[in-house]
Length: 156
Image (cartoon, rainbow, N blue to C red):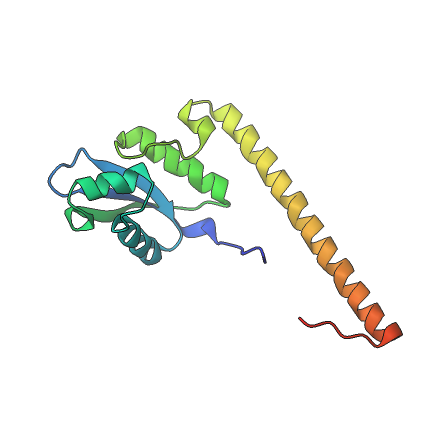
């Protein structure tokens, strides 16, 4: 499966809040607000959904009793950075419907640790991308060589 590059430079931190009980709210992030809103709406109407958040939405009367609004736009450079920003918003606003931490280290308020983890995860991601590119280049070379030498063709 191909790796999809997502542009996190326009990450949106959003809030899903109960219309009548403003103390009930969830914080999330996305790079495509409209699509994410549709996903939340669809998942909240799924009776077989196992997520505690969606179960709570169903218990409170469904999606029609909630409103999703953007809080801020953040310039992030990766998914991990976006998760860190989301966790900061969860901690600052005291979200009541986020049942797990977006990023484990920020929940502990140890910025020096999550910065190191972030850098380490970024390095690992870069290594994986490099290996992926090398493997594909090698496979392309082998395919071309086999076609030339043995006149073989491979379906793509």
